[in-house]
Image 1 (tube, rainbow, N blue to C red):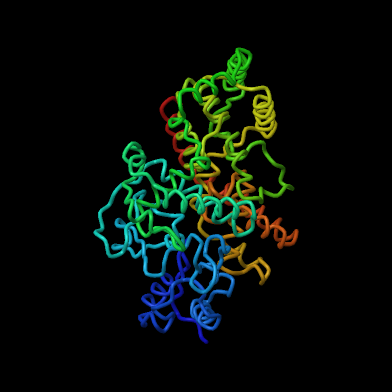
Image 2: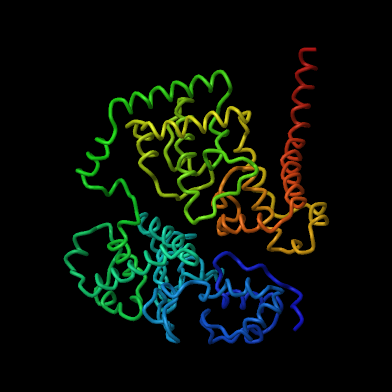
Length: 471
């Protein structure tokens, strides 16, 4: 079958049914010529999947990524009816009241009870036939939804993540059947919960998105570390974890940072999104969530250096500067932000990281992130030299992700393609030969050097004006 002339690129987390509509509309043909209307993005026959892949110019693996079958049974359910998983009943359709009507945007996980909110619009989903009222989601629900999204992705390869989601579903189902209305009324943080809809959770989850969100908050507390919701005795316990020696160590480390800021020009822009630095020969983190502890260390050092410059940053401001907005906080970050103290092992980690930054010559990683974030495709001079096996749209993005992780020392979460996991970049790195690796390294260096050249004319103009004025 011949590929269609206009072949849009699948969006992150886009379901096959949505992509089929966009592909048909882009080429002015009926949707049924691409995919039958009655398909539900799961258990698509291989023949129909091959037709979509051929028309879109995709390989079978890329087409399958758009279906629910990419997820394990703990998420997509068992049997032909897909029961006893997270997948909603086939008659239940959730949409975003803010963006679906205007753009047609939907996501694959919206077909499961794992995602009762639109993370892009930050509002609750609604049933397709219900009134489309936009209601902002509670921050705790949004934070939990991000965690569940990452767990769903990790569950593809990780048995531990599958076990977490299985146990969470069982807790939600049990809580829904035994729900006490008084508990709901006494908790103002919970979304509006329909007790009757909650008790419909059986072989399929409850059909109401807000009810599901409330049940997730009730049953998923262990997945969320929200300091503001901790009881008083827990906050006292946290403060008790830090001794006067820890507080003195924090003051000493800030004094050291002020010294380097004055003597060496140390600045928050010199902090990469992963600490400590890995050498060019090392591969980035592969395991789901492995980058998180390294990014938390980078956030902590970014906070400290900003404080050394007499700033008063928040953890949210530091994570935004590093490009990793939305990561869950940690005891290290909270303690630095509140001035509680710095434990010995954390001071050792941050000290080694600081030494590595100074030894590397204080690279401006913020500028590297800003420069490479604007690069959306490889230069043609590089594409021509790539092996034929690497010359494709998917490989183009993976190559740019490879350049990003090497040049910015940051996870893919901080890149323009946060939906691509770090393990995909590692797998790409293991497939390419040393010559391709050298080519991509030189391409990254050239992209950064080209950005430097753009600032030279302005600098020369400023210097010339000063010379004319005082010469």
